[in-house]
Length: 365
Image (cartoon, rainbow, N blue to C red; front, side, top):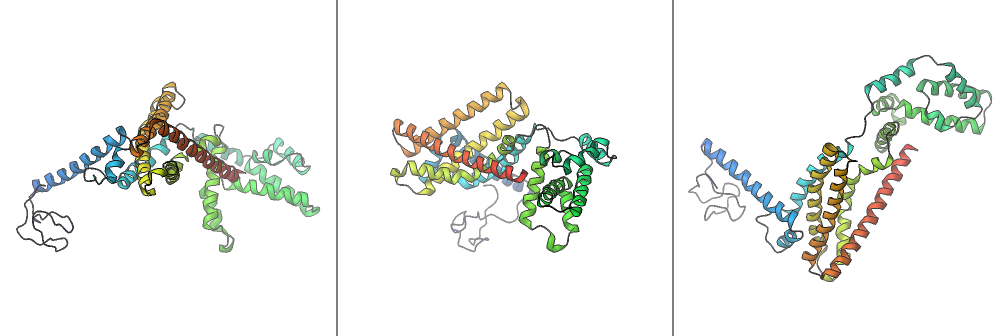
């Protein structure tokens, strides 16, 4: 610690008696308030490299000795390591900044030229082909799927014609068709969230959507925009939720581990700390490998496939080695329980993916 120590024995932070250089009550060093410029700089640099060395003291065993960091933490050897939750928060912030963006990368975005062409199409006079569609709609020969592909102006013309026909001769079937087509037409009207927001503000307060409905609408608009593109794939859309799945399913993974190693008779929090360390290691590796696969080699390249297989193999090795060291079971029992934990987690992960896919399909239905 650089800087001159005070001769006074009172702590400037809490007022407690300081017997030596550090307050035993709050831990603050008993340094002089006034320090020279170079003393300030050296103090700051020393503090930084102290954290830096602590980070690498934590990182090396975290990645190379699965389970050892958790054992040291639970044994009280904590001074040289970063707290598990602090490390997890820091790494997960980096992970959530890098990985979702990398997963999004590579998907073609609708070009401004395409958007301009769509606007021009909607502003042009209706063609004979557009006008010929109306009798077929009225005759019930064109359904929602075809109606969804029409231009905004053509949809409006058809709705006007249907409303006129309904005014002359009301019928439940025609009323249902008008309702279905109106919903599709409103989707095209709300092609962007900004357009939807403007339309909402124009409505009376009582008729405006509530906050929850607006959030669902925002997601629905996003999904519809992606669905309108030729390359859109619902599996790819679900894949983008994987980072959130890893985060939310982590306590459940700790529960599965506790369930399999319940004979060790340790608290759930100990299992959770082990899981936090493991998930932190996974986030670090993913923050490196996912950008490599997406930005450098391309997701469908051979090298990316090899990287993906290496990551899967590394996960299995890490989990087995960590469980073997931390829970001190035989090789056979550790292999058996590692497989069980992987199967349980895989089933849960697949079910959560299915739930996400169902919600997305509901939004675009």
